[in-house]
View 1: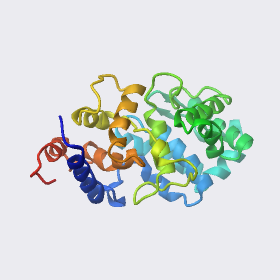
View 2 (view 1 turned 30 degrees about the vertical axis):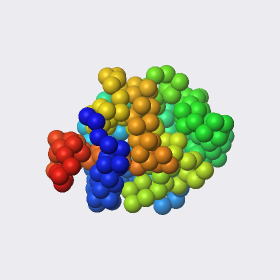
View 3 (view 1 turned 135 degrees about the horizontal axis):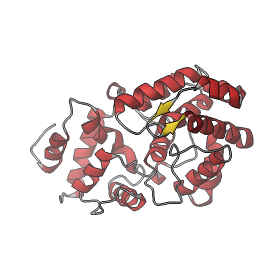
View 4 (view 1 turned 90 degrees about the horizontal axis):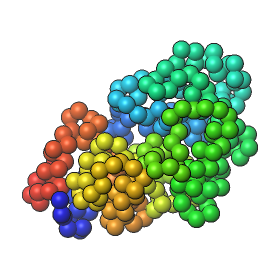
Length: 269
């Protein structure tokens, strides 16, 4: 679908103003981050939430909610003080799709190791990112350090492979951007460098807008989608991610309505 850039921006800005609101967050694992005003808790809870953000949204919310409830109101305290046996006892019987208790314990232990060595997840990410302002390098640093604690299964994607790293980029959006929806907290990382988290909804939207012809939702797909949006909002390419993906996540919003709205000059949504 071809559409003039100025007209598309006007349409997207309308969607942003209308739907980029806290009242539209639920159901979305981003919702849990608002329980943690302290950044040291938010970055750890957010990473857990993002790593588990795959599958049906109802199951994601149930699983993430259960894990974070177990970690308590100050997850940084729990993560930094619980021993390996403590964690296995806390998450005994945990299973979520491909993830087992050992994978979740490995993830938590990996985060603890990063905080011990770097002081925070952000400091670890920033070590890679600041070299060339490349978020993939920052994510690679996180990935390498996480794995030092053990096997995490599929909970953390390897940025050095061809993966779109959807959950990792979703986490960065939450932690870097700051508006009515994304709580932010990671200063020093530019929103201009963020990459679109590619889920099934953004896959369809990106192809509908003509930003890519690729059929595989891989790393190159994510980069082409991001370049398309960057031509519209260079300093904040993922600005429209939340508003656009409501059409598919929330039952009252129909993806076909979104397509008609963007395509038809006279159509409202």
